[in-house]
Image 1 (cartoon, each protein chain N blue to C red):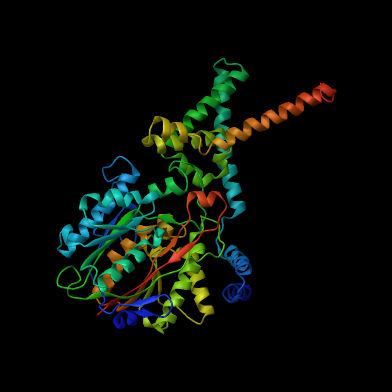
Image 2 (image 1 turned 60 degrees about the horizontal axis):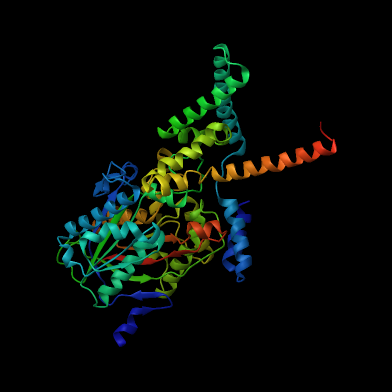
Length: 168
Length: 347
C-alpha cells in the first residue's frame, strides 16, 4: 500500500501531460484524504433521526389524548417540530446537533426549517428585501422548486393512468 | 541597470540588494485563535467576534484597522510615516481592506491573493523599499470566520457536517511594516530582513473540491518552493524553517511527498501556520486553520518572535492562496492556486 501511494505521487510529479497529471493527482488526493466512516455516520444519523421522530410521535399521541383527531394531531406535531427547530437554530444548538447527527437532522422536517431560518438570521443585516427576502431560500429553494415540480409530474402521471384506467 | 540585473535570480526570484527591515508585525486574533496553541503570543485577542460592530464585514474591517494601528504603535510610527499600504482580504472587492484602512489615509495598493495575500504584500512592499520607491511600507491582510463562511459556504446556523479535509477560516488580522533602515520598532535589536522573494505562478492540478483546499494548494506551494531552491541554488537545509500558510494536515503531507520526489526533504523543517494555530483535537478544526489572517497573525506573533529571539535564523515564509470564487465553483471550475515565498532572515 505504501509503495502504491509513492508511485502515485511520483507519477504526478514526473508526468508532463497536464491532463494525465491532474488525473493522477486527483486519484492520489482521493487516497490520501481522511474521510468519515460511513457506517458510524449512518448509525449516528439513525440515532438522532430516530429520536426526532420519536419526539414527533410523542407529540402526536399527546395531541390525540387532548382530543384532536389523527390528521389534526399530525398537523399540530409538524408545527411543533418546526417551531422547536427554529428555536434551536436561533440559539445555535441545531447546528451542533447536525454536526453529530448528519442526515438524521437533515431529513426530518426540522432540517428543512433549519435550512430556511439559518439564511434568514445570517442575511437579516442586508435588509428585509435584499437580505431576508432574496436569500431566505438559498438552501431550501432547490428543495421547494424540485419538490413542487416532482409533485406536478407525478400528478400528471397519476392523471394519465387514471384516464386510461390503470388506477381507479 | 547593472544593479537591477543583479537582483534578478533565476526564473521567478529576486534577491534584494538592500534587504528591507521588518520594523514590526502585529497580530490581532479572534477568540478561538486566542484559545489555540499560539494564544499567548498574539498582540490582542478579541473576545467579541463582532468587535462591537453590526456585521461580520464591518467586524473584519475593524480587525484590520486595529492590526494596522498596532503595527504603527509597535514601530513607533505615525500613519503619515508610511509611504504605501499594500493590502487585501478574502471578501468580494476587498471591502474589509477598503473600509478598514480608510481612516489611516495612507496611499494604498489593493491586492488579491486570497490566503497568500500576506506573502504577496510583503513581496511587493519589499520590492518598493529595496527599489528606493518607498522608505516605509505596510503590508496588511485579514480574514474572518463568519464572513468567509457566509461568502463561500453556508450561513453560520445551518446544520451540516464539515469533512475532515475542510479547514477553519481564521478570524484575525496582521500587519507588517517594512523599512529601509532599522532604527526603531520592535525588531530594532535583531535586524529581521526580507532577503529575497519568489513570486508564484498560478498552479492548478485540477482539484474541484473546495472542502479540500490543502490538496488544491499543495502543488502551488511545491512549485514555488522548488523554484526558490533552484533560483538560489540552495536546498532545504538553507532554512531553519519552511513555513507554508494554510495547507493543513492534508496539504502538508502532499507537499512533503511531492518535494521528496525531487529529492528535497523538508519533512524535518516544514511548518504550516494552519496546523500551528489550532489544536486539531480540542478545537475541532479538522484540517487546520486557513484564510489570509492565518499566516498573517502566525507571522506577527510566532515567526517574528522566533527570529527576534534567534531560535531561527532563516525562514522561507510561503503563504498559499486558493483563487476560486463562488461563481467559478458553481460553474464547475477547478481551483487555481498560488503561493508566494518570502525569505525572512535574521542578520
